[in-house]
Length: 241
Image (cartoon, rainbow, N blue to C red):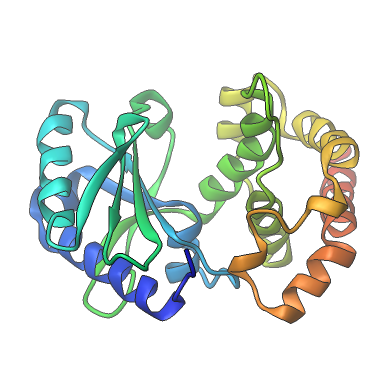
């Protein structure tokens, strides 16, 4: 389906406004992921999904029911894989908005959230920058390693990591260490080797090309892999004792 960015952006903002206005959802959900970075932290690529952390397992059933009540206003809801993931198609020709809710309460308890406006008058709890960066660094490798077949790089993660480095974001070392069992510098060394060996520049626009403009596509194709390797090398060297 052809992605109409203006229409898709408007639908996502309307859904987020409805979530913000629902006291139960605003209290028990925190907004994270690429779209949170796009709306709140200035990520310079488009993003199409809405990702949330569930903050209270006891409210899970009520939270999911309230999300479905909101989504039903915009189109037909389709469950995707699990009870925590669904899509809403807002018209026949449109792309769908996908909503994911993470119920990994133990992991979510490591995070720090700050209330910020997604747009004027739409406050939500947002995952903070250093936690976002830590989880994105883990996700780049974890998404690949967790697949048995059809292994592929999520190139949007690679793009976001370069953006976070460019903006000089800090990394939450505690999250890296608790979720990987490695010191941050050790994990970054492993990640650097992973990028060198697994990122295929011929496929680097897969899953990413539609989210960026022509100038960005040229830069991604020609320099993203090397730029991420360079940024990782700099951060690793800066951490040397």
